[in-house]
Length: 287
Image 1: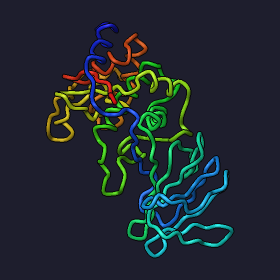
Image 2 (image 1 turned 135 degrees about the vertical axis):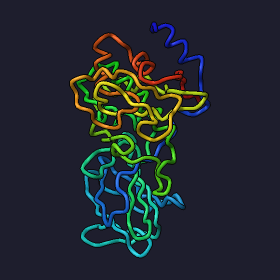
Image 3 (image 1 turned 180 degrees about the vertical axis):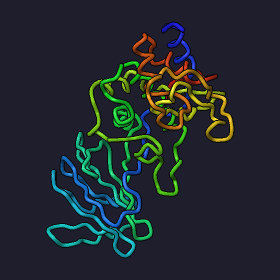
Image 4 (image 1 turned 120 degrees about the vertical axis):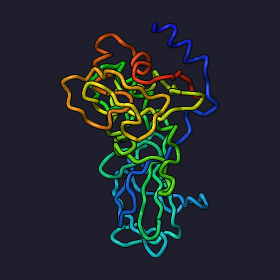
């Protein structure tokens, strides 16, 4: 399929979903303590009343732990009890937050859930994807493969909003959902791929699809029924163009190694996706 036809399809279809809406990504789930900070001064806000509790100093680490149904923060060697079980860490404009020795864009939210802390990153979708693409695919790979990865990851994220709602967030930051390394993982090449495909998703039968992918399929992608006991209309089995690479993952949908090899052969990101997924069209999320 030629590039002109591909772009025509993309912009004919639009979905009434705001492309810059926030997504919540679980970074730590039910831990007994956490350590966090920010690159700038950062407000700690009571998530329930929206009132400021404390202002964290820039480049200063803070320990938080659950305490009798609320959250306590260690300041100058002493724990200060915050009279809430849910807080938001909000850095100054253009600031980053830090947890698990990584930098993240957006805000952090911390909740005390039955005397254990859950930490999540509340971040606009497109900025989330900037931390996903280089975590899921080497930044040295072909740019068109990065674009295919960005669209697949965006589709998966939107289709799975609320998947982990019982924990208070949408998705985990691991390959169990999608690997997410935050701002620490970003590169110019992969950020450009996200920007160039902003808002674009895969749809099938009018719905955004969870565009499953894996590292390699070992020569042939698998049908959904081979893995999950039922077929999906947007999944087909095709040669995966990753011959010589050991199968790694479920093998359903796009092979990441195969995507890179197809990009080397001159396929663009949209053609790569149309190859790996059946009965799909491109749509752009629209305000």
